[in-house]
Length: 314
View 1 (cartoon, rainbow, N blue to C red):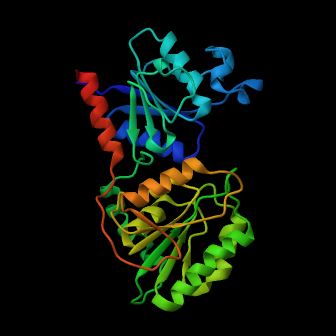
View 2 (tube, rainbow, N blue to C red):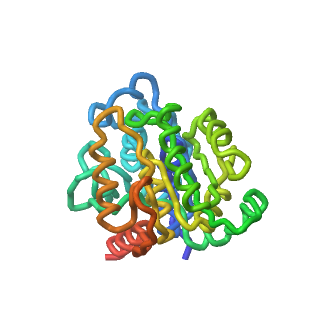
View 3 (tube, one colour):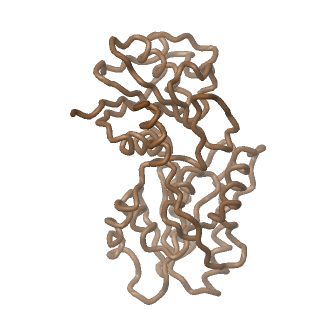
């Protein structure tokens, strides 16, 4: 029996790509990924004020698909419209709160901290993603040529980037790096710094300058380096702006410390997410006493895929 064909729709950001591709792989469907582009002033209007029309977005030249998986505000209307005009029965799944009538979708996958409810809503603890334990282990040795050859244990710092809630100013970065400096003097570990697509180049260079040659700063976005760091690190630190990368790190079962940044505005949803992960015994805050702890590895992607498969079959 041939696999179902999937159409993935996002705005092209790492967190969104990780979520839609992760679910598509867990559902075992063949897929193509399209970056959604909205036309004219539709870019600034919320989906609930936008007509379900081809005029809203740049045409997507794909007609043969069985499943649409979308993520992000800009993909809401294209997902609904493409399902509506399809000549065959299409299942559409939206990740995150679409902020339109939920009945436009067969399934909505949203984290608990979004606080939405509905008959077709599947709640997750944190974000689903595209990482697998096998993929992490397969890339374990990738950083061998980068890290220093000594007996120090490895920690990694995974950095997101500035958002409307968090500023990657020199002051904020110096605060985080200074906490590491104190920890390094006390525990003598080797630090590997991993940037993401959102990390400013100036922040990467500042990390290189701050930590010097005795540690490793990956200068470019490199997924293999990211996976390798997750595999070899004793402790994982992730900046507070990235719920998706904190969720990805939770697949390892290793201690995760959150590097907090003072928010520019109320960040209640992010606080709710971090509170949940602390209650689940997954995270601590960077700067707290260093300790070892265990928790059940978090694999929400496969759990969600199983629910969707069961509902489809029934």
